[in-house]
Length: 230
Image 1 (cartoon, rainbow, N blue to C red):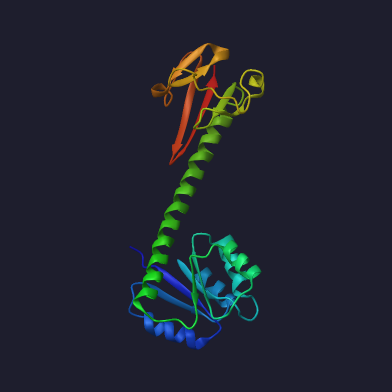
Image 2 (image 1 turned 90 degrees about the vertical axis):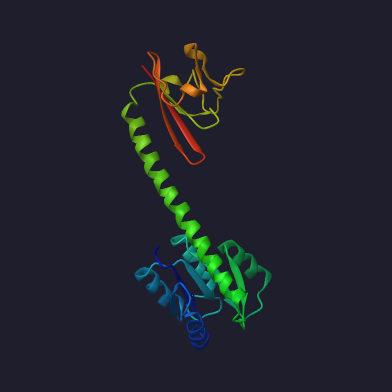
């Protein structure tokens, strides 16, 4: 398994030195930066899982830096390290950044603090898995849409997991409207009233007939069904 990394960002070199010495035997890599610009260079060169950043620093402040991190590296877990009291408006802005933990200076170098860092690394791993799953889904969805577009000359209806119509061929606008439920009112399946056709749920995944075929995409909790008509 790849060793994870934590990046500490603080303009106080003493704080970074103390943390580096204290954590040098732990099971993760440590990177140190004296300011956000240096931190961004490190992030471009190394895989970072957790960022622990001071707030009040010269140049780009910690809040602006963490906002950039959330936008460009959403899987990276963000922790604030600060020794200052903050206004209500700043605290509200901090909440918008999506902070895993808010640590106050001076730090108490205890096992509890180390545990926070390991929990943050575990969250980063979960974030990475979720990000990978989203990318896989995007790839599957792209392929699915490409297949759908290949038959746009044929009438089609696109359903979501609730059997609601979310798109249709223009020629079907008067038959199946967006938002319409095709769920059969009494049986477990869908009812295509305009074609006098009922399809049981257990046949939906690979349904083929002289009237229509169904392509189904399932990923996680998401399901799409593309019904195209002959």
